[in-house]
Length: 383
Image 1: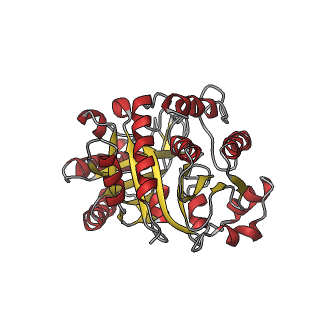
Image 2: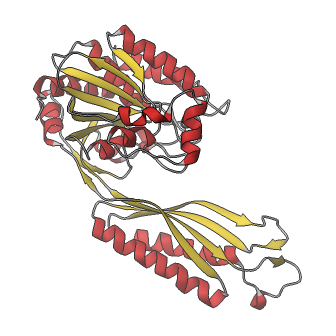
């Protein structure tokens, strides 16, 4: 299997979607059944023994003894692209097809985006013994035909001695440098919060401006602060990616707004300091407007250093330039790093596009990743 065939298979899987005309495939949704069927067949075609574990991860084992796990996720962001996550699974299968000398387990994780239940990495969390046990998640597992009582058996033990993940960069760095591959040395820490601004809904035509308690106006001012802090703090990215105004009518002053905040930086202390500035800023903005504000943490993830030296050696041995980089996006690698040495290699995203239907990869870059993966498997040894 070469880069062209890998791209073809990624695009084929993109047809399995919850929204015709878009690529949307969430955790254990009906389209995931067809994806699992196809990917399982491809795994078995190259000699892997396969199973679907109790959280819906598709896992294929090749060879004997301590093994390297290679994986990524099969779900997508809403209206996402064909390569996010899936590319890494296809590369893993292609590497097994080349008959590595070491044992390999390919993990096609059932969930990496956190779209359906607001919690990412449900699949990989179960592997490290930290499963998500929310009632809604357990219900989805049962409805998919799986047994939550078997979740503990999904956890890895001494049989898995390392982890490697291939992923499209989903950003512009490699494209701007003209490089096919990037060695990921760490995954940036991130904080996700939901803020609730509460004011007073009232008639838009009869309520004077000086007597309003407009929750959306306060939230809008705060969103401007988020943008300002991110632009003036080196290396920080901060996003308000969701906003909901109630009651939601053109002629009614919004009395309540929920807004989702995402803050990321390679240094935990910088991220935490910026987050505190933004939370304090929300209070400072709300008070003069007669609003109250409440914040609820959704995710706190520290920066995760990765085992980048073996990847660096593999890229060099394959004849490609080495560029180290920090991943601003979260990946399953940062979950597996809790248990085993975890490594990651980025593949260039032309145009720097990710989480979008127009995301793409070049066949020659995928071939470069395969060449580096071959070298990695040749030099990898269990620790």
